[in-house]
Amino acid sequence: MTGTRLGLPAAGHGALAGIAMVIGACACFSVLDTTTKYVSTWVPLLMALWFRYAFQAVATTLVVLPLRGTKVLRTRHLLFQCLRGALLLASSLFAFASLKHMPVGEFTAIVMISPLAITVLRPRCSRKRCHHCGGCWLPVVSPARW
Image (cartoon, rainbow, N blue to C red; front, side):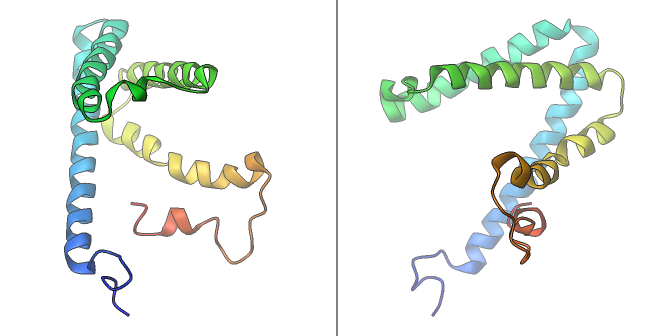
């Protein structure tokens, strides 16, 4: 059976679109890291963080709110959302501060290793067994992951 008969996209067009999106994402990350390094030399760290998240909040609101309405603003787990926001802020604060002291290439390499670290720690933190067939490593080595 072909992929289209199973309800999956055709391999040719979908693969090329996926490759283009990954290349675009990597380019965006490179530009973001580089601009962060240069901006952090001109303005205070907290001002750069404030502008980044203010711009992101306005842009996301302009796109998502008309599409999904106010139901996207409701949550059943406010505490977890606040904790997630605080961790994201701390992560960005540390990232912006570290870019003042290290080259962009090394910073990006360290940040990109996080999927591997998450995969290694997942069985220990979630108390789920990792079968010997390599299922835990599939997200790390799979081309679809990158």
